Image: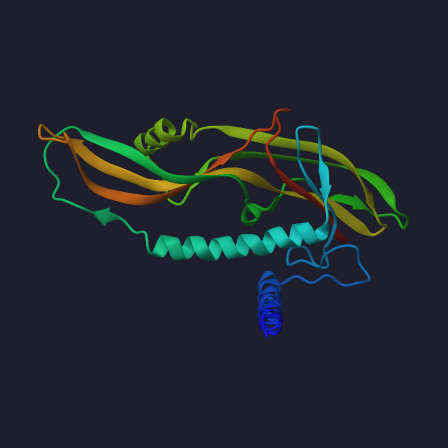
Length: 249
């Protein structure tokens, strides 16, 4: 009986997962025809993914398309969770503002070392055209500089408070640059897209004043803060994923 119940639970989970997968893929407006080794996307007409690579300290490491799609679906899930959290984490007011020296603190509640920011995916190269009729190996060069981002525009004082707590400068930025040889079919164009892998810190920016009464400060408000910092690899490259694509001219 216990085994039967476990099988029913597993089957139910599989059906739910399949339903969510189909819904997410529909949201992405993407499909993967069996006759192609790539993806028909919603960017360029009839575009296909040729290859996907993650940068590493030792150079690019190729990813499978299943890994790439899995990251996209996971990002959609994370965005939905972040939106729900943002809706429930509005500015909080605690006390009437009193006189004193104002300050801003950042109370970090947690951090994630690697977040695949596939929602920031963008084209970073010019189109390279093969106007012939045969496959040609052509050079594609892409470059992208990424700085820090947050869920709202930060003042210099707020950026300083975040740096004091995390030890990471909000002003840090790093650059990805890559030149590759891409085999482009005749009558097609090729290009490179990229999204960064970033470090995430989340918590509350707290606003208050110092006082002469214990505990010698008073916090009157705090704001939910979600910050992403670019990651630099040991070879000096910006951490991230780059995607080679092609489409008919």
